[in-house]
Every structure is written in structure tokens, then in C-alpha cells.
Length: 154
Image 1 (cartoon, rainbow, N blue to C red):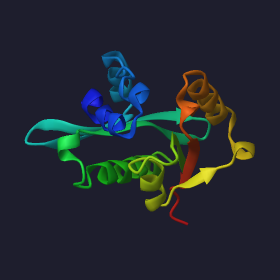
Image 2 (image 1 turned 60 degrees about the vertical axis):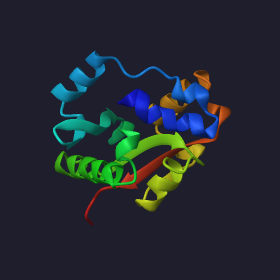
Image 3 (image 1 turned 180 degrees about the vertical axis):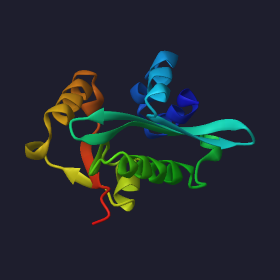
Image 4 (image 1 turned 120 degrees about the horizontal axis):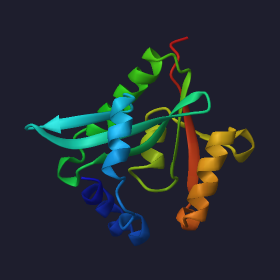
């Protein structure tokens, strides 16, 4: 599923991103054991997932993927809303993620859901470390940003 979802980057001439290996199954198993993976199903098949991780004082979105054949149906949005519910239920006040700023199904998508950019000066230590690792992996070939969203009801 991750490989199929990643193929959308090839259409944007981002082959290096499309060719990025999928997380190891053990990664999903550990996340599942901690309650940090949510899945979307259609006809008894997994068609999307969101992988979460605790980072500093926030619930961090590591990855979101939806099988392209199920894209445009609101599955990614529903997964993100479910992740926000998880964050609230677990007492987090905010969520974070890093993403490609200009890719339509990345930065603009999250912005449409109320996420906002985090300036370099406001990066928490963990988020700054994520950004350093992404840069070292060559992902800054395309503009990337860190984003956050408050999940408190006040």
C-alpha cells in the first residue's frame, strides 16, 4: 500500500520520494502495540493508514498513506480526524507533522484541515531532529515544513 501511495510522487517528478522504501513490518507492529497506527478499510481490505508517534509533548504524524485507487474519497481526511480524536483522548494538546510544503496532497491538504506552519525558531527539539534527519536524507530537495495543530477543545 505504501509503495502504491508513494507512486503519486512520481507524477510530480519526485522519484526519490516515490522510491523511498516502505516502513518495515516491525515498525507497524510496534506502532500497533502502542495504539499508534490507525487504518481505513474498504471491502475488508486496508486502503489507508496513519502512523503516529509521541514526539516531545505532542502526538506526531509520522506518515499518512491512502491507496491511489481510493484517493479523493475523504479517506485521508477521516484518518487525520481519527488521529486528532486519539490525541485528544490521550490528553495531548497538539499534534505535529512534517510534510512537503507545495505538494497538493501534503501541505495544502493539511492547511485545509486547520494545520499551520511552525517556524524554524519554534521547532521543539524532537521536531528539529526530525527536520535534520529529513534534510540529511535529501528530502529538502523540495520545500518541506513542520506543521502543528491544536487539538484542545478550549
